[in-house]
Image (cartoon, rainbow, N blue to C red; front, side, top):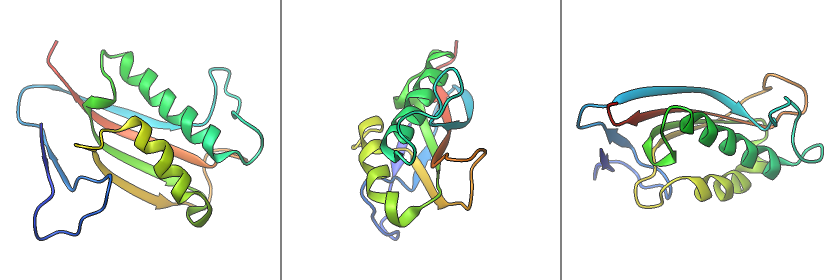
Length: 133
């Protein structure tokens, strides 16, 4: 993979503007992962963004592992927060534990009005490129 931050674009820590897959590989698309445990319950106390974001990334890791991948294979993340002003710094704290600081995936972060259920605060989906089988 080739991670590129073109000189004409602004720099943001933890973000790569362009990720190019340069060889044969398997593209994997991971649906939105939430702060839900394997029984479908919201983790943490009500309003615990850190617990939910951590669980969402752990769920993403599990989804990748199911196809033989890990977070190093992620080339694109889309992140959804319901309260950007309150949770942006916490989001970065959690995300930075899961993505490479040297070659972070391309990333989009948006604030949304609501997620799929009451009390949900964060969702992440991903695209990964894994080696051929």
